[in-house]
Amino acid sequence: MRPGLKLLLITMPIIAVGVGILAFVIATGAPPERAPLAERATPVRVITARTQSVAPRISGYGLVRPARTYEAIAQVGGTVEYVNPGLQKGAILPDGAVLLRISPADFALAIAQADANIRAAEARLSEIAVSETNQIAALDIEKEALALRAAELLRTETLFEKGTISQASVDTARTAHLAQRQKVQSLESALALLPTQRTVQTEQIAVYRASLETAKLNLARTELTLPFAARVASVSVETGQFLRSGTTAAVLDGIQAGEVEAQVPIASLRTLLRSALSNPDAISLDPAAMTDVLRRLGLTATVHLRLEDDTVSWPAKVDRISDSIDQRSGTLGVIVRVDAAYSGVAPGERPPLTKGMFVEVSLQGQPQSGIWVPRSALRDDRVLVADTEDRLRSVEVTNRMVQDGIAMISGDISPGARILVSQPGNVVDGMLLTVTEDTALMDWLAAEGRAE
Figure 1 (cartoon, rainbow, N blue to C red):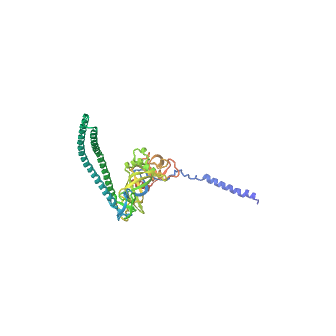
Figure 2 (cartoon, one colour):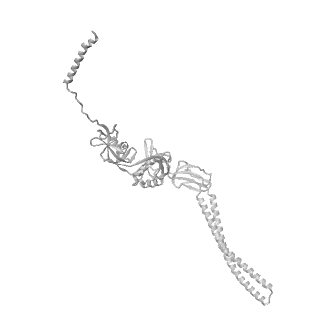
């Protein structure tokens, strides 16, 4: 049979029967069930907004240095005859300890010489007084003699006028009178100089007494004593060595207090100040002004030393601000003082706060009350919340403060609001949510509020 005829007589009837059966089934069968359209909920994690107090704080790092340093500088030169046996690097010496003593022989001689000069000048004053008495008596006598010479001259001139005596006799009398006047004049001049001589001797005595005091002061300077308890940092003197004036014999670090210049970000410091000031716009970045502000705020400072898995802490107080900003890191030095650097020392447990330790300094202000949320929950000054119907809402807020990983917000947010802390894939206002409370994150926020 030809293929065309076979297709026409066999295949086409079979296709027609199949189409007819399919049409019958469709016409007589039940329609397919339709699934109703349902809204899909997006799973999210939330926290419940609560009002809590968190103390703003910042941290910085720095090296410990002594608050007081004593340089034993020789004020006089001489041979060292005594050096304290404890004057060795690392040793601790008490307040008032004698560090070294310079030979006092030269200064004792200077004192003796000054004493002798004073006695000689005082003897000269006595001599002037006696001389004044004698010259006054001699002047009285010479004045009487002058009166006699004047009377004699007058008689001689009278006799000459009468022609009784010659001109030579008159000249002789006048010469004797002038000579006597010269003697009186000499004594009066000598007496007039005595007050000046007395003043010169008095001033000379003052000079000698000043020399005596200088010699006594230099004698006292031959002994160097420690004005406060300190640890020896360096020594450069030995017994028998000639020590020149102005030479540093030793350097000692005070043990009563220590200082740390912690480098903190200036922006963080400014934020800390803003949280404590009633007028934050008046904050000046001038170091002198910031020092005054810090002292008035009463910030709390703590110094921490990390020792492997342990941490040792010391209470401190903010003392002042460094005079410059680090140009490389943009940080500002805040200098804190630890008054108990060596207190509570326990060998193997608690070391003293000694020079050169690298420590952390935390500064803490007054607690700030408000709604605190993770910083990641903020998106362009807005937060996402789940309303009472578990639908997404975007709320505009004000970021009042940021600290580490948390932020304090205000605005149309009240305690009890459910704030999203996870980012949904697509953010559509009003979308349905499947809400899960993140209890671990809420416990962490609560711990931040209890942290000191």
